[in-house]
Image 1 (cartoon, one colour):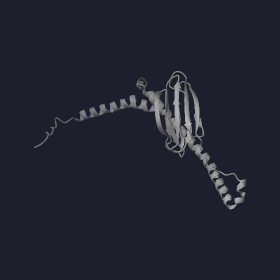
Image 2 (tube, one colour; image 1 turned 60 degrees about the vertical axis):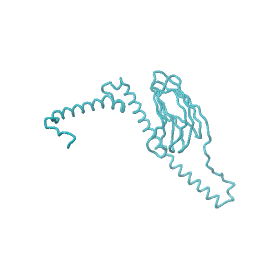
Image 3 (cartoon, helix red, strand yellow; image 1 turned 90 degrees about the horizontal axis):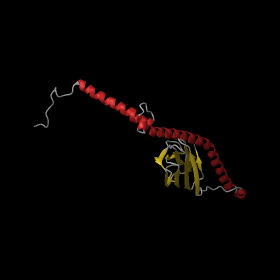
Image 4 (cartoon, helix red, strand yellow; image 1 turned 30 degrees about the vertical axis):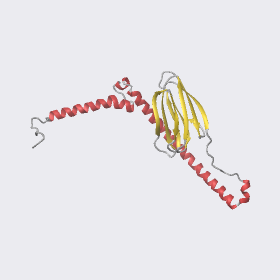
Length: 226
């Protein structure tokens, strides 16, 4: 008893047929690579089809965000290296003060008491004007688990944006939220790690736009980084 007949030699595909099928599959893969993958991922559009399908714009945004994220990462690493030496000095100074207070209590009244204080909650209203194709980024330093309430709206047209963070200790930038062609967003930014967290905006319209960003939380300042 058997389930199927064994095919005869005549029923099997010939070498020419197999080569033809392989060639068709290869050509199809190349066409997909050139017309879809390269434009949408790397903004490379040799045929112009990606521009018609609006895939090239997607690739340009990805390429720009990747380049800007890499520049931010390098900048943060440089700042971290610059701050490491002063930080060590500050710890030594604090230790010396504590030892002095223990050894010589009488001198305690002549020395300032050093206490760590958490940043007080504050609210900032930031106005951002972007020309066509112009982009900018604003960030806030937050510890892991730190939260900031935010609300932003756009006048003049939609923008592309990315809400993300850059680890203070170095490493890959993490995107929390991103969208294209939107006119506003609001919510709570919760830091997944110690570092700089914030918003990148890009105006892809034909005219200028004005973004009004409101932030509330226990941070020291919000600053433009690019």
